[in-house]
Length: 366
Ligand code: AOF
Ligand code: ZN
Image (cartoon, rainbow, N blue to C red):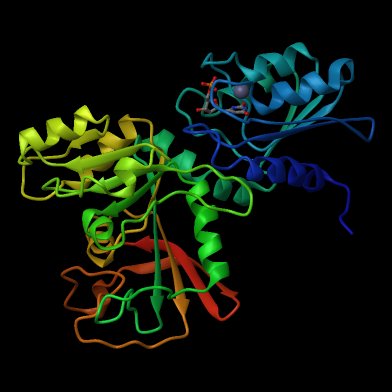
């Protein structure tokens, strides 16, 4: 049984925020709870960019009971006029007595000013209740708002000997059904999904989110330096989600024009023979894509790693050994001479999913 304390109510705010992951675009997920005289009188979640913030929903529900209440918010209330007016001002106008915040808002337009505004008007503010959970929940927003770059997750499914296909190219299926379902939930929580054109040629995937209940499909991003994507591939024809092709200025101009004519967005990243991935991430960030799930083949994953671009790696491991001297591995790149130079995973989480193992962590590049 949970004790009724600050963590108890903040936990509810975080639970609500957690469920809105994937639908707020470049905005954070935020939950707010209003408690007056020991009673829950208002709850709210930020649902979509351009719509009211969490505090506004919760305060609207509380009505006149907001006066003298304690408000729990999973992110520092904003202090700026964005698409919506500042929440701190609203909290002050409602004459709330106390505000409990899980973590500061790293948005340079806020960054402590919300807390300062509240304190300056005599409201008691406590900061840091369930901070780690709040930071973890908004890791994508935090990266994007502070760097302009998307948060990048690499997901792979391999055999225990690290292969993502057999020597003949067979890969259906490596991971079990539950693991594959988790991947669709991951797609729902990312704004973009990225693969190399080789994956399109080999598998013609849809790259949509398919769950037992409807989910949100990410923007499909295909790295294709020579625009060799087949005209009839699913991502170009099914209309189930937007598709962006990343290529270089070396790509055939008339081919690019023909694709653009069909409504396919092409982003030119560098003038070398290969797509400049650093530039690609910057441009995708500018297009408002704040998180990307990389579901590439071994070479795509390897290139992302080699460019030190991944923020998180999620490996699904199946209890199989397939061998194959030329069978592709999860991460195919030049590699390092010495073990001391290896990329290591920090904040490791290991989970068992039936007979599969999920290992995830944050890569540290030496
Ligand atoms: C809050 N509560 O529920 C959210 C906040 O463009 P706007 O007006 O929606 O402002 C977006 C910024 O506001 C966003 O970058 C982040 O700093 C903050 N989000 N703040 O007090 C909320 N979603
Ligand atoms: Zn706000």
